Image 1: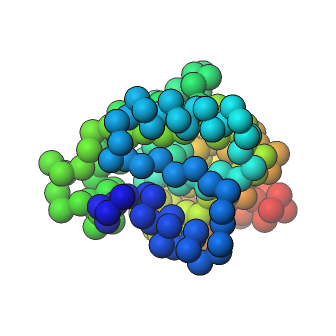
Image 2: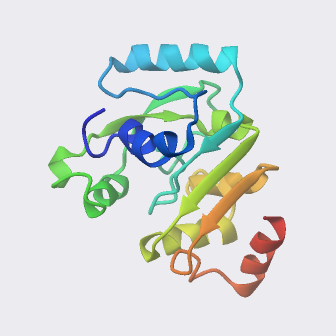
Length: 180
């Protein structure tokens, strides 16, 4: 949890410590992956997820479900392979020094499990994500644009900035504003 790219560290410092959230389950990437998945799957069975914060990547990934994402698996958590675009994003954001230091796999909540959440929030800043945002909100719902599946959820809120929304048509912008 001490690596700068650790989502546990990121969430702890930027959200949990600042809000006082007490009911949560963090995935400690320094533990054995099979054990992390086992514990997370048990926790989900015991208490369904009220709110999921899920990232959308430059390649349109949802969480770390890179294209082509598995829209069919019922496993709550799984080990996913990170494509080169996703790994380059990690370097570009400064989390890793070069591509050789970025892991080739990650533990991610599955797409189906994300959709089981009562509510989903995704914050998608920066011009680097504009093409993915366009593909996910104006293209077909497809495993090739994994975050496009969010359009099927009754309570998904997507926060875009002017740069990430720059390629969206006025009609799409109006529809997104009306639904939020």
